[in-house]
Length: 412
Image (cartoon, rainbow, N blue to C red; front, side):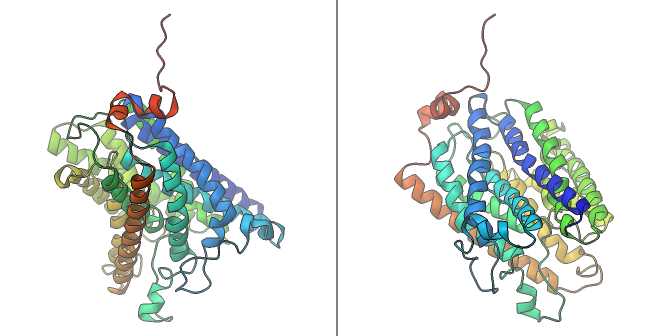
C-alpha cells in the first residue's frame, strides 16, 4: 500500500532485515577460530555486495512466473529495472524490490557457516553468485511468485479447496534452501584439519551473542515486514508476539538439553537456541496462535540441539551447524503448520491436505537446493579450487586470503 505509514514500515523492515546479515557475520564470526574471523565475516559482507547487485539486475525479474510450471521469470524482462523505476506505482514497487533483496542476501550468507575456516573467498563469491541465480531466485518464484509451490494446493486439491502452501516469511524459501545447500558444500569441501567433537572452540563468545541479538532484532522485520504491503497491517500483532514467544521458548528448550546432556547450560547454546526458534517460527509466524508458537519454539530448541550432534555421527563437517539449525528448524516449522495452522492444521479443525502440501514443498526445495549447490560446489572445487590447503588452514585463513588479522595486538 502507498500510505505514508505503510511505506515507513516497509523501509524500516527492509533496514531490519539487511541488518540481519551483519548479525549473521557476528554470530558466525565469534564461533570460528581467531585466525578465521575476518574470512568468516567477509563471506557475509561479500554476499551483501554481490547478491544485492544481481537481484537488482535480474534476480527480481526471475522471482515471479507467469504460470505455475515455469522455472523462473525472464531475467531479461526488465534488466536493471529501468521499466519498473519509471512505471506507475514505482515508489511502492521499488521498495518491494529492496525488501526482497534482503531475503536473497541472507539466504546466501547463511550457507557460508558450513564451510568456515577452509574456503577461498573468490571461490565463495563465484558460488554465491551462481547459486543465487539458479538456486534462490527460482525458488523464490516457486514459493512466493506464482510457481509450483505456491500453486501446489490448487494443483492437488482444486482451486476451491482453499489449500495452499504456507511459508509466510521463508522457512522453505530461505532456511531449507540454505540448510540443504550448506550440507552439500560441507560434503564437497570435506572436514577441517583436526575435526572432532570438542576440539574446535568458539574464539569470542560475546561476538556470537551480539550476532544473535542483532538477528533477533532484525527478525521482526523479517517476519512482520511483509505486512507493510497489507491494507490494514492487521497481522503485525500476532506475528510480532509469535516471533518473541517462539524464540524465547527455544532458548529454554536448547539449554535444557545442554543441562541434561552435558551438565551445564551455555551462552552459545542460548544464542543457538534463539536462532533455532527464529528459524522455526519464520514460516509459521502468521498462522499459529501464541500457545502453539510457544510449543513450536520449545520443540525447535530441543530438536536442533540434538540435531547438531549428527555431524559427528554421520561424519560431515558442517562447521557452524547450518544444517542442524536452519535445515532442521526450517523443516520443523514448515511441517508443524500441517498439524497446527489455525483452522487448517490436522489437529485444529483441518485435515491432512495442508500437511501433504507442506511436506511436498519442503522436500522439493530441499532436494533441488542440495543438488544445485553440490553441482556448483563440485565444479568450482575441481576447476579453480574451493578449499584452501591444509597448511594455509593451519596458518590462518585471514592472513592467507585477506592479508588481515581480526585482532592486532601491538606492544605499548
